[in-house]
Length: 276
Image 1 (cartoon, one colour):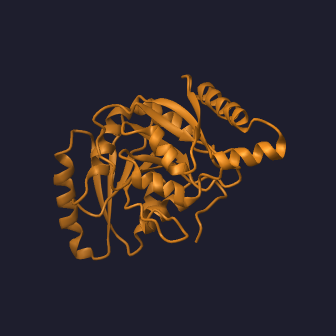
Image 2: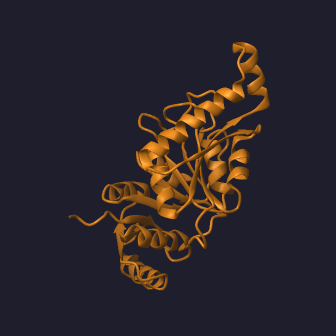
Image 3: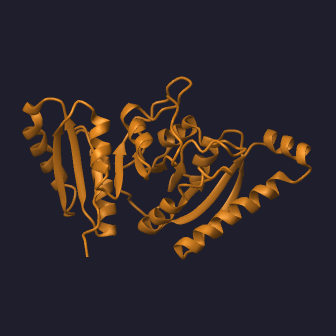
């Protein structure tokens, strides 16, 4: 039997080791290892960078790890290339909101855009190692196939961290009134049936029961963060735009990553990309 794929952790240096610390905790639970990747443009600093990172990582735990320092002017390209042989990517991000674009920040945004797999992002407020299992893993969906692409990855993460899954969708009062006026149906009830179906689907795939809730709030990011609370995690697709709620535009995902005190699991669905 082949060894399980490692968790890939791209870092600049030893200044911020939160992603390494979290990855070692997750790797221990999953029975795998951690691969720390640092990309430099100057070959002359590679050896010292590797020594410094190895020393700092060794102080975080006894999980098997390796440190790779590669020379490449394109940091995101190096990360994406190495991610092909990793189970998941875990990295920090400033989660910067750029006007009209809502990017995570140049490197993390590019990595998420380029990979059709989950990326665990630690925003500026997120801690590293989880002091306790998350009370809940919140999975926002928006009625689109793309928005539901996170479901499988969310179920795996929930098992790994020992969290209860809650499938949610966000409905504003204005949208609810418009839809009910147009179609003559109780929109809240329709959405409740929708998230119930997704929750049951998660149960069939994962073998454990998922809960569901319709959130009534005008700002989707605030609704998601409020529901997750200080002790919950979020897992969401980005840019699943075809649903009525349209809560997965890059700006909303970025707001969630920026405001969450815990890491956020993000995935870009196939055939969808963040805006240029």
